[in-house]
Image 1 (cartoon, rainbow, N blue to C red):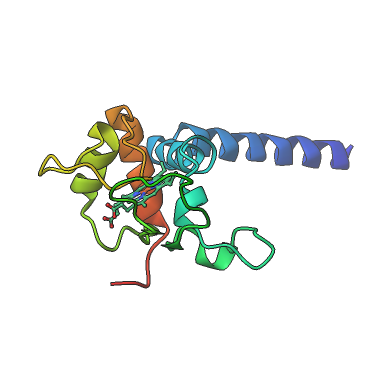
Image 2: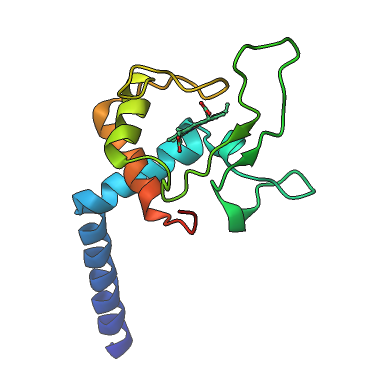
Length: 140
Ligand code: HEC
């Protein structure tokens, strides 16, 4: 009997903790940003260095570097490297939201290929930037 009561208390506590976490708007926004980066925008394909097996190097997640591929026909302005975006060390949050929402920076310039000219919804662009910021950065 004691065990059943304990289990019920434990399950209730867990359910409560879970529902609090799920209903926290900031936590939900962060989770959405992570999902958009990892599963929709596939940002790591260009922005994450790989190890010698071709797998993403988790210790250098989104820390930029040389692209693992090149175009088979010449593409003007091709950027051979992708910048470090973990913690967004080189671009302001407002500028990053603008870039992800409109495909251009505040000067009206698009980034060089192969950076896709994303047109995220404003809230999604903010969520992506929130997630990237949360990663912190050692680069200045
Ligand atoms: C196909 C490759 C590719 C993918 C996928 C990609 N990027 Fe990029 N990204 C680049 C390259 C290359 C640049 C540098 C362009 C330049 O130098 O003009 C860049 C630049 C940026 C910049 C500007 C950073 C700075 O410091 O100036 C941001 C921010 C950025 N990318 C975010 C993202 C995010 C977020 C995603 C996923 C939602 C993403 N990128 C997906 C290739 C890519």
